[in-house]
Length: 118
Image (spheres, rainbow, N blue to C red):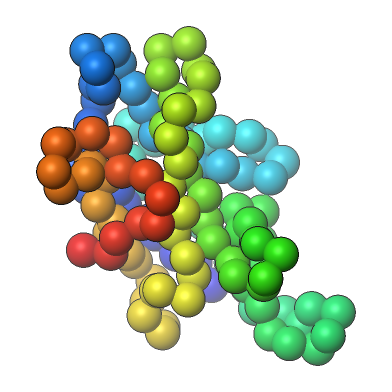
């Protein structure tokens, strides 16, 4: 499945320092996008127990089986200071495009924790 992910309202500064958000790819590392939009390929395939699970070079997972696509916020020195997880079970069935909120609602700082679909 081809999925387009857009991060809306992503801050470019935090505490007066430049910041960027990147998609985490298992083989390629951090992938940046000038438009904060990424296209990923994900598939469903059986795991060792025979259960259908999401897989792909951008799909990460917890020990409890939850699958997510991971974004990281980096400062000007390429140090990670926040992370954002888009859980695949939050995406509507048959969706080919999703938009997620890039900033925290209270202070406009870079979003962290679980991504909120918009």
